Length: 463
Image 1 (tube, rainbow, N blue to C red):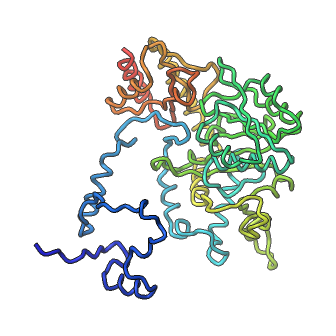
Image 2 (spheres, rainbow, N blue to C red):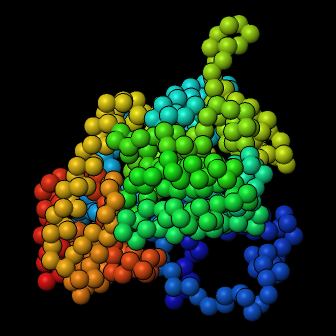
Image 3 (tube, one colour):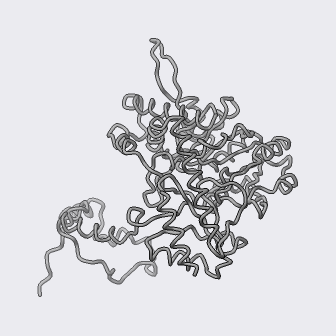
């Protein structure tokens, strides 16, 4: 059988054989293999890849991709109690409507001729976010909360001139990995012990380790493991007594019920804005915020863009960059840190969310989450052999221990999955001292019936 004509793929540029030939002639190459001659022969794949035949129409392609997507088990079909850094909150339709508008969705890093609306939108976001966290200055969002945390620690190091940061052992392993990578090799990361009964920071260990080398004492509130640090003022006092800064990583949606970090001594506040109007998107979208007081020593150490409002020569109010010269956009080699793509679209989205809810809505939302979390904790703790790991107050997330049931978290989660429920995140690998424990998450999307369904499924799973 004669060879078929080579397939010219409609979605791959320059796949027409004549076009390929002209391109090769232009650069003086005999064939495409000449382009890879610098790669050793032993590293080149000589076989034939098991790639299926081409899809020759848009209709076929769409059907194929949809068949793949249908294999996903999503939170639309399953009941989810997963959190651990990316949470299922309700996203009002207006958030998606605004962030899909062309002037926002396609705006990258342009100049004032196209950015008047975007500058104002981000200024409004920063203003509302500053009010929420009770600080004066908030940046355009960084890539995610982990980067915001790492940058906050680097800011503290530059401000204090010190090269050490103290962090809790209970923090997110992923966030800790980013911080270590971002701060190496010139900032040492030391971990602090925690009270096994409450999960809260061991103040004795903090006092022993805080020294004249410490640039920042960093802690999460609420913690990655869900509990609330009730002694934030004491942690900040120890930090300040040693000449360090207090850096607090906070879930912004908790601030409807919890005191903002500056009330217990925080100098830098950071976190992730994913709870403020962003879908989970298979682990995205995220945006990290950093907030400080309006003091030169803080403002000058922000690597990211800040938007402010001022009057121009004609007396008109305008929006634009504040202290632009400190960024790597201005003079790259003199920037405080390199700043690449910001998550500005998510900042605009969070601004829409905050404007929609307002102070009263944020407070009502916080109370709702707190109440439903407490209800879930009470019901789960009543299951035979199951206990709550920590005695401290919790917001949105809490640790459930299954040691008394004789079942592993993996077994429990497999049983829940059969009932179309995503169980809590397995902590047994990252925190082996907690035994067979899992991190469960409850938000405003979970009804009483949802929580009761989880309890019923857990009862069946541990029998």
